[in-house]
Image (cartoon, rainbow, N blue to C red; front, side, top):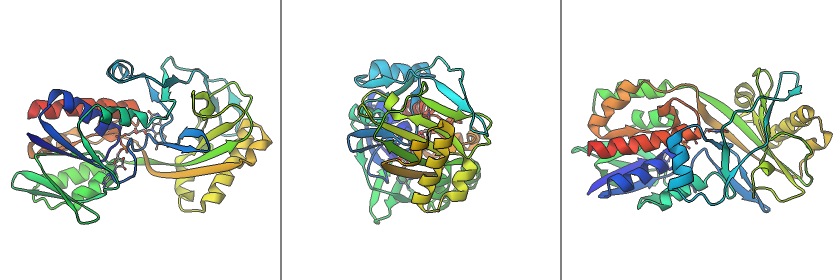
Length: 345
Ligand SMILES: Cc1cc2nc3c(=O)[nH]c(=O)nc-3n(C[C@H](O)[C@H](O)[C@H](O)COP(=O)(O)OP(=O)(O)OC[C@H]3O[C@@H](n4cnc5c(N)ncnc54)[C@H](O)[C@@H]3O)c2cc1C
């Protein structure tokens, strides 16, 4: 029996658990997740009969193996494709028809979190929610971890870290682990820069008559980076209503991260009304918000130190390991990492 501990229940961990269950059936997998749900930044909430993905917007059909996973290996019931196009807008807020790529833009009727839920349901992994890992300890060729309540987990033969790079670097910095490798790892992982995104969720009791699913700011000069309509995802928004996901750009998000959410949401609704050219959008009937300090990695981490850590039974996985800030990349990286762990043990 190989005991494997994962820190974080993001999409990458869910994909790795799924693979390990198939190729290393003797593995005993424990996943420690700080929040109440799974799937990390591919996050879904529900309110008043509306479902909305307020982190990642969709998963693209950009990787054959992930397409096969989502359409063949997992139950694809309720997988919905957004078919409306993505238009663009510039610094002055002028909207233009955009060229749309051929890939699918998938979510689920019940939201993107279904990806991790369906993957974990197909593995024997035990997922411990509301368990924030604080300290990693290496002793006697095994890993143990301690959570913020002082509870110890392990010993694990293998430890796998999924949090965004800055949070992983902090765990390594506080680790009880005397190995010269640790300093190289902290430098490599801590050097990954992130974009911050402040998200406003705006609900309206009427439908919007526009031809696009989303608007993206292509010159990166507008305070708003992205506006999309959840009603384009089947099963998310009842007829006669609209729900907009509005993401501010990095600079605006950093400058306003700790401001009052009411002020931020109101400022983003005002800008949205200007871009979409519909004054009604300044007055949503309910709203939600989320600050994502570590929204998207700008780069990947150098692979050398990450691979060296594998000799100490320590693995890393996620979008920042893949070097691409995308959900399909996190899933693919999880599948690949799960296989590498299985082959090494
Ligand atoms: C606003 C926003 C918009 C995006 N838009 C898109 C998009 O449209 N398309 C796309 O493909 N991608 C998009 N992305 C990126 C996509 O969400 C990520 O690439 C993907 O979800 C990363 O998955 P992951 O498994 O690598 O990490 P994560 O989802 O970050 O999972 C890490 C997990 O670790 C947990 N954790 C952290 N620290 C600890 C700890 N100490 N103890 C226990 N648990 C811990 C976290 O709670 C989390 O559940 C977007 C991201 C954001 C934030």
